[in-house]
Amino acid sequence: MRKLFIACLAMAAVLVPATAATAAPTGEYARFANCPYTNPATNLCIYAETVSGLVKTGNKTVPIKNKVILQGGAHYVIPEEPAGPLEFIGATNGETLSKSPQPVPGGLTGITAPSWWPSFLRNLFNETINNGFTGVTATMELAGPPSAIKLNLTNTLAAQGTALGMPVKIKLSNTFLGNNCYIGSNSNPIQLNLTTGTTAPPPPNQPISGSPGHPEGKDGGTLLIVKENKLVNNSFSVPGANGCGGLFSFLIDPFVDSIVGIPSPAGNNAAILEGTTYLGDPAVVSQP
Image (cartoon, rainbow, N blue to C red; front, side, top):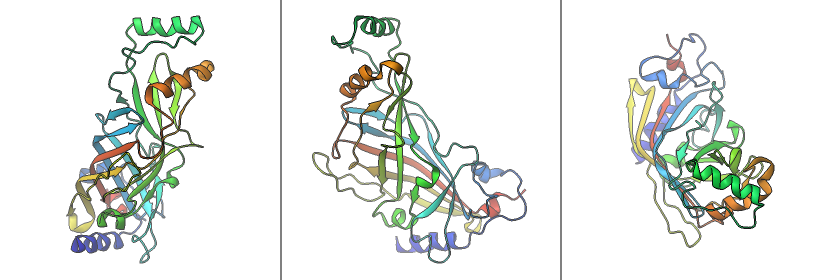
């Protein structure tokens, strides 16, 4: 691990911002197409894909079935960094964290409208269910600017402390719930402080462990691929729902809360993100 740590820091230390060619990336560097490599502050391109894992909020567990991408660039000051947190720079296409809907197991199947709802709202809900619109998707979105993302390569490689911190909110999508049904918000987000090490959550959760993965340097150290990395966190709290059902959110938000089991205090939730991370030299990424 110590040799790996030194090798990765050495690779990062030689990265320099692109200043000349600005052609679209090709080959193995094509995945960095949305890295802000023309920004003089960028001295590291980042592309991380999560292909499996889960997010548990309250009593609902949603497996990750569709790939989630975190991409952009980072800035550090040599030699003090990258030993500390990096300054994250957003993706050029505006989608630093991809909006990848995940199917919620069970959806609204078997759920009936509360008796305390007005009759017209109960009828609308039941009609929606009877028409087969029971599926619900959950989409994790960044709750704030890209600069709110905190990436620490030292902690990642050492398997201790926060490797990746980011505020998120979860959008629930369904015909009945409308287009603005969220768990969390920009002002009251779910704060994920993910680690590749072992967590120390409050009860009833038990510690779980992540993994730095298996790094492989390519092209003389200008590209680093870290396979099978695993980021975990099970000590965060989850706020209640907001905006569900549009004008009737004051009635439907509590309904969603009761189904999902939120607000949920720390010790009852979990996030496990598994996949591959790619780090690239922006000077090479930009070569024609």
